[in-house]
Image (cartoon, rainbow, N blue to C red):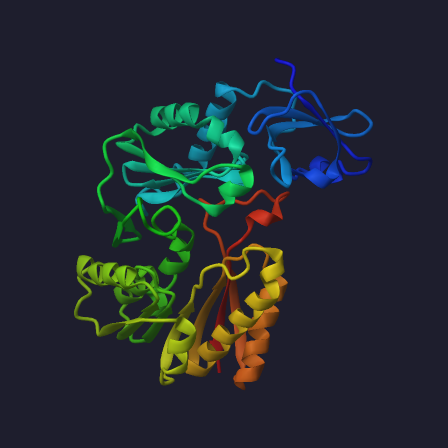
Length: 393
């Protein structure tokens, strides 16, 4: 192996790494031996000289090393080929016949920190979130093309977190044919049109797929309120399940227009439905009670730990109004996608909202990531999506 820079940790700071955590923070480092540049490989050692792993180094980031392996092994093309094949194997049978849109590689959850790959039919969408993965882009494209033989690979590395890595935001075609404005996908019998060039995340909220599907068996004859509806994923599944009336709220006129297209695409135009463009907090205050199911799927309110206090107030306000709008025996599906928001804190916020609403509330289930968004148990930060199903009595 080529001699790699050595990252020596302070005494006692090796414990998280020994337990499998893939991040080394700059504050844990005692010294760096050798020339270091962003995105290059380096070896990590304890103060006593124990080898801990090999990972991508970025001295510009608070996370100075993102570990790829805890073994003394060559980290080259064959290494990444094996990791990609392993990720593909996890999804091979689970999604056959259920959907043609899912996450192929989920960063740390698939032991490839900094790399996200989503599949939409014959198009792959790639995000390189770190300098290490960005430097391997050409090799990754070749490996993905060999594994999937897609029509296109499109980059959506247009995320703000790249700035922390010293990287500019990038997007554009990387491989194959030009990507059309919309790609049609199918999800448990429902069809959607996805804009991978401009849509939220990589085009669609794939992490909510199984939660959307769970609504089908619950929606027949029910009045449904979809807050932060985006392009209507939850609403379409509710409509397919026989909802009697659907209301969508979102701040984006374009997203609501696409949602209307989805009603037509799924032959659900005859279901009474309306779209309200506006601020969800304000719109909810003007609605009359009488809903049987309410969905709260807001964007992340706490992108940083320091935002938790204001985020908690926002979540409480939303859930308070949802409880007030629900009929007796109505269901609330409420979510937080802020990874700084713990399960315990989120449940306490929802409990507080229930208390202030004067309603009696049962917690029926906790829901979160689907199979294609695996979480490394040694990396709890990877679990960002937290959902509760509550019943009002």
